[in-house]
Length: 250
Image (cartoon, rainbow, N blue to C red; front, top):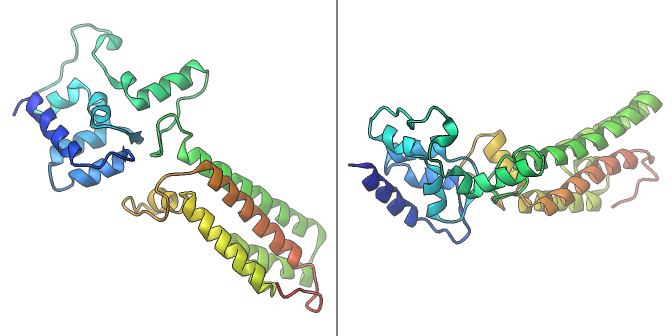
């Protein structure tokens, strides 16, 4: 089989995919599993994480070297000694264009994360949300360390720690069941709709085929989740200030 036949074979597999919402690298690897390991290895090696809109976008980022390697031939490169002289279609691809735009603007090249060309990196968005939550948590812990000891400290530490694990748990500990249910529902709903749960399952726990709610990060909803999470920590802290007699029911 020559390289043109291999390209046509890969195109045939790509045409089997539903491209209406684009396809990620993970989608391609999953589709090729059990069909052709040579092509699957090529995709894994040469296609970077990102959202691609057509089969041509995939074929454009695979250099001629990849097809030669797949044939078992030793690739010796272009005759010129300069790497820039070698034919390369990566810059015409959506991922290459996004990297070029960022470079011209004086920014670092974006890390494509699976939710669209030229979009912010998923890892950066998730990191910002986590940093915002950590700041709120650190502020609460700083107040605890500076101002309270003994019974009052333990009264505050427990609900804040519970809310840090899951939204609403601290409010439940503070005997505020209505608020606890509302925060739990808001937290789970926003983390699912924003794509955070899918990101955690795939990037943190390694479950690449798992989708929990949205399969791409939605920055607006992620920002709302971060605000909800920060409020959840602060409210758990503030709710612990009231005495048992003064504590409201919801």
